Image (cartoon, rainbow, N blue to C red; front, side, top):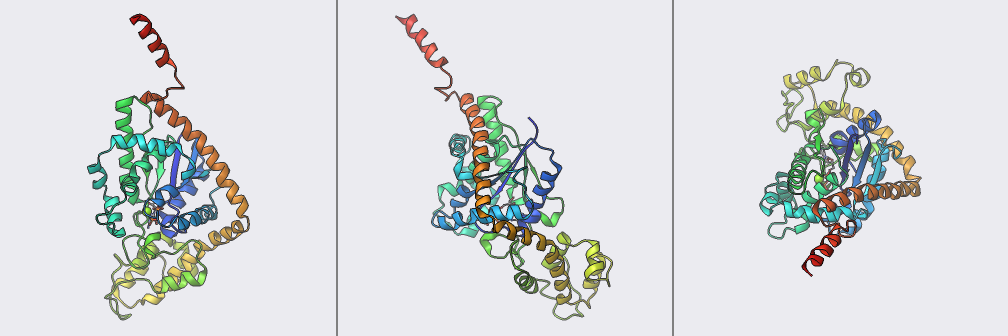
Length: 363
Ligand code: ATP
Ligand code: MG
């Protein structure tokens, strides 16, 4: 078997530029390289329900929005299988068996889950489903035999948890599951793109996002009201570049050519940063530049999305076909898992033969 790639997103909202730099851009590159046997993208609706169980309408509606975002960034359904998690029931089976391999204390130690629990203010009423979602994610990854998982930094504890489950399963029941490796973005600022409010992470659930589908006026408004250096009050004041979200975004998005196009007084980002640090460079000017750079990046994505928005039945069909394919693949891994655990009673009749002879001998 060649490489199997699997990655996904929770349909809790439209996808944003954090997803783009943290994961989507890498998926497109991997797709174009074509060095894989299978490439799956999961719309993780069941996982999204673990903290949105009281709002299923939101999840249902965003399944299509997320699929449109994939197509908008250039994911090609002929090369990549897009599927809906809840429509692959074997994943629930795997989750149930993996639960035996993980302690409650281990789940409570997961740093991403800890952070998310705090944000969601569950306090003493944590839904069991939410606490155990890393186990279901291990099922998603290992259920397809995935070896490569392109994700943002917040997902590293999930991949680690998956690796532990895979190792534990293989040592108890025999070599059955493949060990996955996370692939992170190369640029450090892409590991966890901050929100437009300067918060540590741009996240659908925090409302601090620039969405891939945002119209140009909306993007401009969001950028012009972005957080910068709070001590850079007058243009002549020296400014800080580190922790200044506008510069973090420039680190991620701008290229030297952008200066020639939109801000020819500077050759590159280092020159711009030096001037900001010295003082004499206003926030409005750098925000205008960032706006030009981001608008240029998002325009083709938005246009492609608009084309697909006219073809919704086709998108629906892509999801249906992808899910059918995913079901086949996952079922074959699940059958291997059940056979390793000896719970494949009707697949393997050796149990009957064994007992026939056992009781024959006794009689
Ligand atoms: P939610 O708030 O509902 O959890 P989210 O914005 O965190 O939504 P997910 O669907 O949980 O999005 O994450 C999908 C993928 O995008 C993951 O691989 C995650 O690491 C990556 N990702 C999400 N937000 C960012 C970000 N701000 N920077 C880099 N990568 C990100
Ligand atoms: Mg998340």
